[in-house]
Length: 164
Image 1 (tube, rainbow, N blue to C red):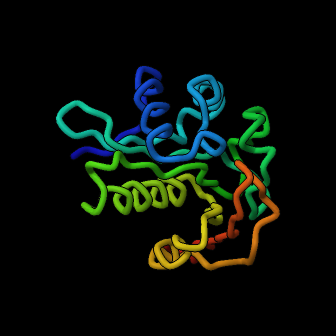
Image 2: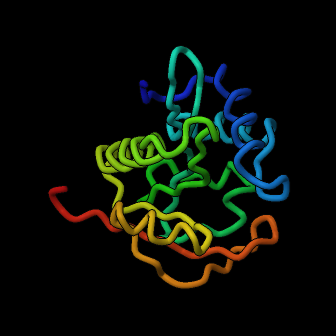
């Protein structure tokens, strides 16, 4: 398996994986991924196995340590030099789950954010994933104001230590 920056040609696979991993009210569409990629394509990583995209992680940068819903819907809000890397989605095809691929994608995204001088990373997750993200250094900040897809979310924040 290889983890690399996504290419524009990967967007179709990314949208297909998203549709398999999230309910339709929460899943981004092909058009939304294309718009996001045009704004922050350097913030998309894909996991590839035998030339097939099997997972991805993506998100924009912002100056606030939170992930408000408007960031999902307006790619122009991306701040390339923002202090925080967000995670919009971490998706792995069902047949490839429980093999460490999501963890490898997240670790790679964290490393990339650190290399780019970000102060930290933010995401929202459902209750059952709080413990998973805590293993990587994220700390639950409380119930999110987000109502993305009509679901209830938790704000998670990972502040990078100096010298990490």
